[in-house]
Image (cartoon, rainbow, N blue to C red):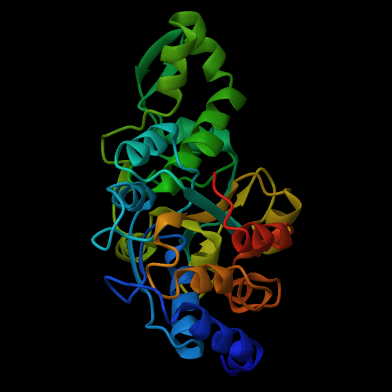
Length: 342
C-alpha cells in the first residue's frame, strides 16, 4: 500500500503532534464486532499501522451483536473503543450503553454490501426469489388452509423452476447482524411475496404471523453458522448440496470455489448494489466511543483514516476488496471531523 503511505504522510505527522500529550491507560485501539466488516477493518488497521506512528489496532470478530455488547459494557481502558456492525444498533442496545455510562456514540457508515447466495462452483445454477427461501426454510407453512411443519425437502418442491437438489442452507447464526438483514429482506419479504403472511394473519393475528415468517426450521435443512464466512465455505466444500449466505465481498474473493445465484432476476455486483437494483443489500458501519477520543492514542486519527477517500473511496483498497463506496462519504467525513454523536 505504498500509494497510501505517500498520500497520508503529512496527515500522519500532524496526528503525532496532536496526540502526543494525551494521557493514556493503553496505547492500542481495540475493535470488535461484525465478521462482515472484519476484513475491511483489518485492511484499514494494517495500513494505519504502516502509515502512522501509532500501534496497529487490534481487530476482532464475533458478530455485530457480540461486538455491540462489548461496546456497551462501559467506558475505560478495559472496554473496546469501536464496535463494527452490519446492522444498525438497536434501541435496547443504546439503553444498555447508557445504563453503563456509554452516552456519546458516533455512528460511522463506511459503505454498502450485498448479501448473496452461493453454492459450489461446479454445482447446479440457481435463480432465486425471496419467496423460494421463505418456503424452503420456514419452520411452518400453510397447506390447505392449515399451518403444518415444512414438508419441502428439495428445491424443486419449493419452485419447479429450481433444480431437484436437497435443501441444505447454511445461514448466519443469530449473533450476526447479517442474520437480521436476512430475516427482514429475504424471509419476511418472501413470506409477504408468497402470500403466506396474509394467509397466516387470517389464521391467527398479525404479530403471530410476522413471527412465523422468520421462524426457521430445525430439522437439519437449515444450519446456523456461528463462525465467519470461512466456516460457511468449508461446509459447502464438505457437502456439495449446500448453499450459503455470504457477503458480496467474500464471494468475490472466492470465485474459484463459489458460484453466485441471482435474486429476483438480478445478479449481485457492486454496480447493482450501488444502484439499488439488487434487493438484498445493507449499509456497513461502526460505532465509536467518543469518550475514548483523546484518551486512547490515535483513535480519532484511525476513524478519520478509515473513511478517507484513500481507504473508503471508490478507488481505494476497500472498494477493491468488494465494498460498495458510500455516495455520501463526504458527509460522513465531515461528521467524523466534528465528532458528531447520535
